[in-house]
Length: 229
Image (tube, rainbow, N blue to C red):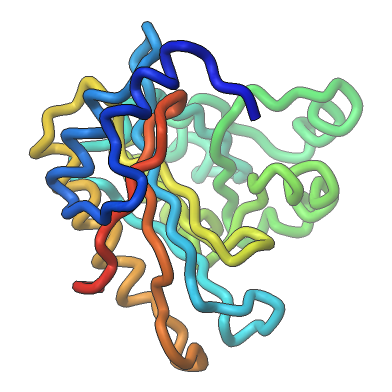
C-alpha cells in the first residue's frame, strides 16, 4: 500500500521495532497525526480469543470518562411513556413500527447507535439484515436493550463505547480525538483497558492480549508494551 508524503514523514517519528508505554504512545500518536482535521485516536487490540466459540466471545460497553469527542446520534425504539422518556434524555430520533419502512425501504441510516426497549425487539428484529452487518443491532450486553432508556441515552451521549471482537479476533475502539489532552486520552485508555481485562473469557488459555496498537485516523500505528496487561 502506497502512503502519501505526510504519512511517510509522520511514520519517521515512530520506531517500528519498539514497544511504547501508553503515555509515550499517546504523545507520539498526537505528534504523528498528519491530517488537517481533528483525527480520532484509535486502539486496536489483538486477542488470544477464538471468536468462533461462543464462550470466547467478548462484547460489552464502557463509558469513557472524557467522552469520544464525537457527536453521537441515538435512535430509540420504544412505545408509550418510554418515547417521552427517551426524548427527554436527549435521543435524536424516537419511534416504533413506523420507522421500519423508513430504514428498510428508504435506506435511512442517519444514526450511530440504536437503543430498544425489550418489548420492541420483535419489531427491531425485522431490521436484523440491515442493522446487524453495520454493528447497529441493539444488544443487552452492550446495554442497548433496556427499559432504562434514560440511562442508556445519557451514557451514550456521555461517551459510552461498545467493544467486541471482529472476525479476526481484534477489538477496534476510539478513545478520543488528537485535540484531547494527553491526560484525557490516558484516562480514557486506562478505563478501556480495565474493562477489557475484566472481560477476559475464562475459556481463553494462554496469553489474552497479544498486541495493542494505537493510531490516529490517518497516522502510523504505534505498538504498545502489553506485558503489564
